Image 1 (cartoon, rainbow over the protein chains, first blue to last red):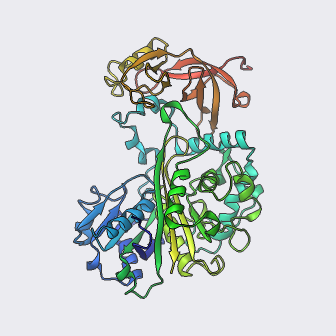
Image 2 (image 1 turned 45 degrees about the horizontal axis):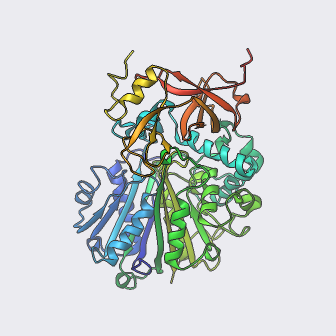
Image 3 (image 1 turned 60 degrees about the horizontal axis):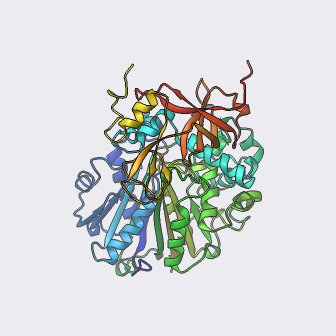
Length: 390
Length: 133
């Protein structure tokens, strides 16, 4: 049994806002839902499944279907941070394959900038003493950027990765972001500008870090017969994987992520290899996030990521693996510190041929979206999705 | 100052570990079945799932696995993972060190500092380095 060809992404919408003043969180969810419904050209009342993460208010399923006027018969509130929505597409495809629903809506939205919620407050729920590891970690106050910095430090130590190589990831993202009118950082930057930006937490500089933004997006996944009745290009779900990794009782190895397992699962299900992928959306909370995931997914060997990303290899039209052609989290947006949904949306744009012409990958028929929720520096959940245009 | 006995972070499961910290001792757990040591301490072995586990006082010796100097706060903080001579690699902090002297592989030794949890947190100092005034 497989989800291959069991479901199609028929609707995708990204909210243009990066600072959501004057709009409630619930309305942001409604706005992105409306955007995806209109993109798909499907009546709202055909939606019979709702998928959401921890950003959806009111336990998600209690409040949002009621607020949106949805009459659903299936729901899934899997919350693994930023990678949740990539897992939701897989879960929606599974539910559709099992006949539990036919049209699944996924929404994601947040407004921490407008609400002035710092990340340590946003993540404070993780300090609940009922969480078994909290007592052994709370005192050290490891934040996302310090955790990822420790990953980068170890990667440099084991494999000789350099700050200049990491900087190429930001440079590539900025080359793409210049064409995105909604991107927060549209200026093309150089390797020198990245490595000379202020040191935040060694070895990560300010420009190794993603932006912090409001916003969100929505996806609609539908059964094959419904997808084929619509007038949008057909984007089929071909494979998916999800896995978690943490500190493993003290058997710590920060040089690989759960992406090793999710990539293996997704590629096997889709029956393709990394070499077949024309475009990749790779979670980019930090430059090191991208480098680690590219290795773990098999785009290059472990330890070779630095050489793989250098010299523009991730720039559309220049390198071998165009990535995050919307500018990604590093330059465009990272709504509510959860970047998974925008990864799916840009992959859908590429497969439909609807990316900006300056970054559109020619004949883009196979794409990957990969996310990391939580922290590669402590514990995380990875999710991989492989999509095909038919 | 709150003690381990009053801390909301202390549960029946980790009480011995927290109270040992007040005595300057870092407790790990040793599995009598598979022989492995684990951290943070659980009432069972995460490797083989045996419940036949016992407290083990760490030797206090270790090496830096990785670290970072957080430069966003008025006071520098050196977050780290240290691989203990007893096996487990644990999340911790390096204290009393010149950030430029800290390297992966450095030998370190156990210390404790106060924490907002109400009982001391295990941290580490560089073993053979004297911080220049």
